[in-house]
Image 1 (cartoon, rainbow, N blue to C red):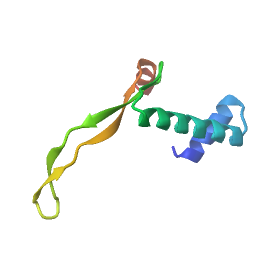
Image 2: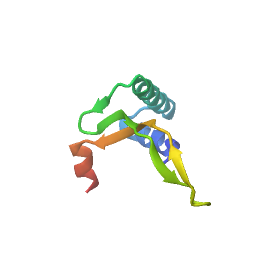
Image 3: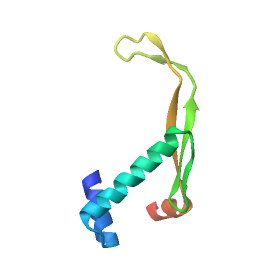
Image 4: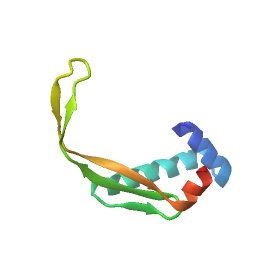
Length: 90
């Protein structure tokens, strides 16, 4: 499902217009991104939680040459699904 399909599904499910559903989705994305950028955790009960963790620097390998390289440490976003979401996917 891409963004346009998600907007359409949200509009059909909620009774909103597609324009309003797009605004709501864009607002959710912007708010979540802002919170994660500040290092906050975003928890949606039943759906799941988004958090930022630090991935340590590590050794890797260039697949073309086989030469060892150092991969820098960086922040990564993790998503842990909630129990309701996990049960619905089974």
